[in-house]
Length: 280
Image (spheres, rainbow, N blue to C red):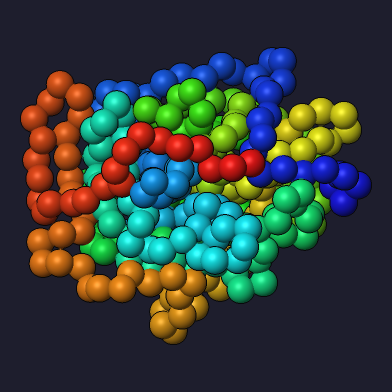
């Protein structure tokens, strides 16, 4: 994988022949098992995909919350919307802190060594009740070559798209190449291994490039990097922190699905305006 010459932040990646097509997830039943995946909205600045890995922690890509000049995106400009489908989310939550490895640099083209570090954690203003959404577990990749990806992306940003089966086409050190159907907005999308009772996150979409002449996407092994970022948050470190404490009664909001009544636990706030895609 070190031989890859040009990497780019999701300028587009085609699914290989033989992979399953994309399935749109809209209803509560269709979302079952994928509830932790949501859209990470940057106010007036774009979106990525993210996934709950703890009641108050969202996993996404580092380049989603750190611009190419090294300036962090302000935490209070970020909203996480789990299971968002055509304007309605299962949970909508404000972000109060972000953390990215201090060695990470958002560069274009992407140096191969940055892929390992392209990981961010977003701390939510309020934890999401486990009765509403049970977070994904982060695990090491198995030896098999079949994975699954759920993401938002350009042209399909209003609802999650699920690719039931795509393939691991290369591994080297802590990096993984997959031929899954992803593009702008898919940054931070969880790569899932579904052999057990419940899907586990075994990698995350970071960048696109070529592997043996094939257009693919690259991710990384996550357990060690996630553990380091969690420890840093616990020690009080942050890449960006909301300037003001959350207002009383604001934070996570539990909503309904299209065509069903909403049950609001608290009132949330979201990014305004339409989606703008993060630059490749």
